[in-house]
Length: 407
Image (tube, rainbow, N blue to C red; front, side, top):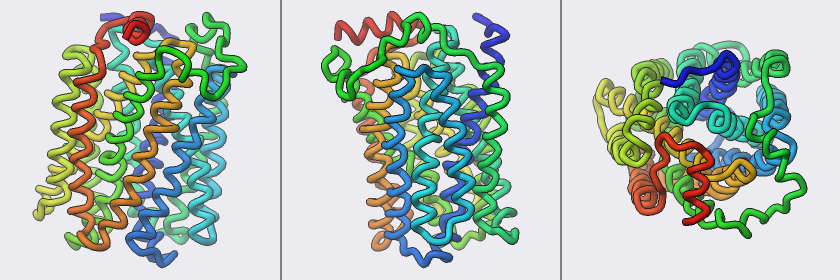
């Protein structure tokens, strides 16, 4: 088995820390949403619109991600860590729902750009034989952030600062900057490219052979987000309002689900490298659809916890899978721009629209039924993967890019 070099190991630690806070932030909003609804007098539809507004930051993050093809991966990653920490800290000082929404929108811009660049780094710096493993492990660190969030939020909500204290913790990423500046290098592939994307126009990629693949990946991401953005996010709302669980019971359920699923999430990258991306997609998408329905339709507490465990695992795994495909199917000079278009700018439309539709539907059919219906989108995702995407297992990035260029 190909071993990581000392630098690759250090790089892995840094990227893991960055992804850790992506997981923390994702779970934080869902965990504090009932408290926000109470403080700001929000209805179910209002909560859905708030989540949709914040989700717009994931689309706007495209303009940050695309800078990586011009300014370099390292410099832009540093900017994203700083921006995320600043606006997450400001969220804790919000005086009304508009303050909260704007600060979180801005924080999400930098957070999602940071996440995207971590995946680009992983694709360009780790060996082909272990690329799926590396990307899967990074997503697992996001799951660790989710665990921390699930464990500490019930306690933080009881402090004098309440939900605000959850966001003050987000200032911690500032500490990463000192380490990152010392140990992080620009990727070798970007340096070899000599910043070929400098001065590139916004729509330049649409005049290349990769435009079809961008559309395909955008549709795959969009349909996936319709389910994954809601699957775990609204579970607390469902559990409290429709199953009568307390904050403590919900926190315990999410912590158990995250902890039990974590070993599987850490191992899923090895499955991608061993089985291949396409066979893994069949397993992961099937498990995601089934577990989401079960997590929002079951009644017994421990049955709900078991279903939520598989939903958390499948949710993290399908994102790892799509990260692998998206970073592997484009050449270095277009990788940042392609990821930005496919995921941040177009694919995140599903990320934004999904919560708005679910929130509106929940007012009439309940959170359980509204979220369960999103499992249909996962079936569409699997169909698109099997029809459109080639197998990339074990291939160098230059080879997988050639697949696209002749396709």
